[in-house]
Amino acid sequence: MGKHLLTQRRGKGKPRFRSPSHRFEGEIAYPLLDPAKPLGGQVLEIIHDAGRTAPLAKILLEDFSKLSIIAPEGIQVGQWIIIGSGKSKDAGCIKPVGEIAEGTQIYNIEISPGDGGKLARTSGSSASIITHDRKQGLTQIQLPSKKTILISSHARATLGRAAGGGRKDKPFLHAGQMYHNRHVKGKRWPVVCGRAMNSLDHPHGGGRHPHVGRPTTVGRDTPPGRKVGHIAARRTGLRKK
Image (cartoon, rainbow, N blue to C red; front, side, top):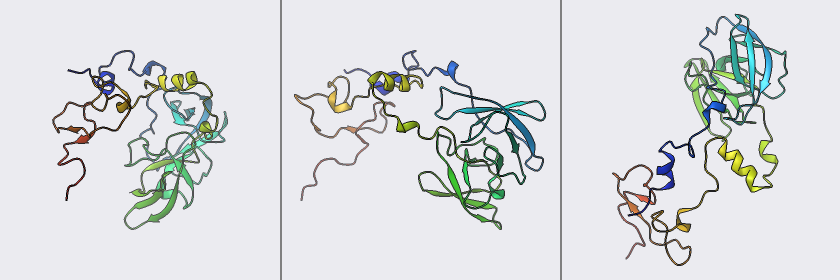
């Protein structure tokens, strides 16, 4: 009988593996407003959120409600943004993708209208508008991975590029920096591969020296966290003639 794998112990919810959500600023999503009635707002401050890589901008809207969005590059305190339909092309304005010109950079894109934004949200990321299909009401966009998808033209997005680009340009010179960078999001570091462990810690572990060993076939009904190696494999090993 071996121990529970690291992925299984992480799922127990102990403080060691729990994400420090009390430091997070909460969910960042677009408000449910009528796009035909644009609403303006002013940037109050730009803050850091420990739970994400990009900074946030706090907005005071015209109806005196407050809103937090992922800050675009070049935004300043006191800047005015527009949420909804309009002719504004400034970075930070939120518009339906069907009203954005082709070739424009956008980020925090909704997959379906009203979901608050799901795509291109990390620091320095942006997508671009490729073309519009006015008859079917669809817009083709190119994601940061260069993959192209079709979404509804009523889905909203923010103009510009998410702030915080160049975050990865500065190397981690000390191991402690990487530890705190992962720990703040509830992730364990360093990560050890299974074949370097002992046999009681991982199905791939054991042996006099690190070696690949025989492939481990795991059943389909194996508990979550123990599914390593070949999941419900029909056969393993070299094919014999």
